[in-house]
Length: 75
Image 1 (cartoon, rainbow, N blue to C red):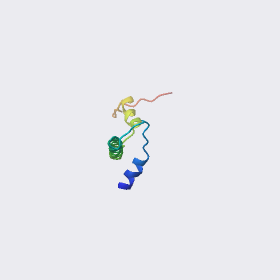
Image 2: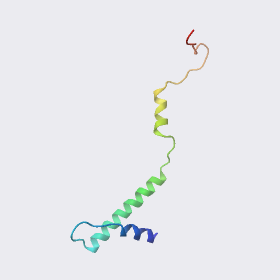
Image 3: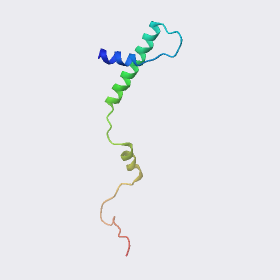
Image 4: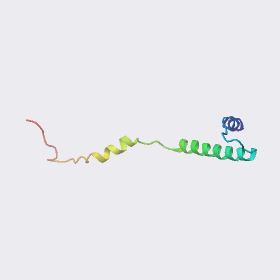
C-alpha cells in the first residue's frame, strides 16, 4: 500500500511558485484521501437493475388478467 501512495504522490505537480514541504504534504494527504474515498465508494455501489430497465415499468400499465380482459384486434 505504501508503494501505491508513493507512486500517486509522485504524480502530483504543484504549479505555484512557492510551496512549503508542509503545504505539499497536507495537499497530497487530502488528495490521496479523497481518491481513496472515491474508489471505496465506487467499489461498494451495487449496480442492480439499470435505470433504463427501472424506468420502463413506469411507462406501462400493469396487465389485468381475467375473463373478458383480452380483446382481439383486427378482423
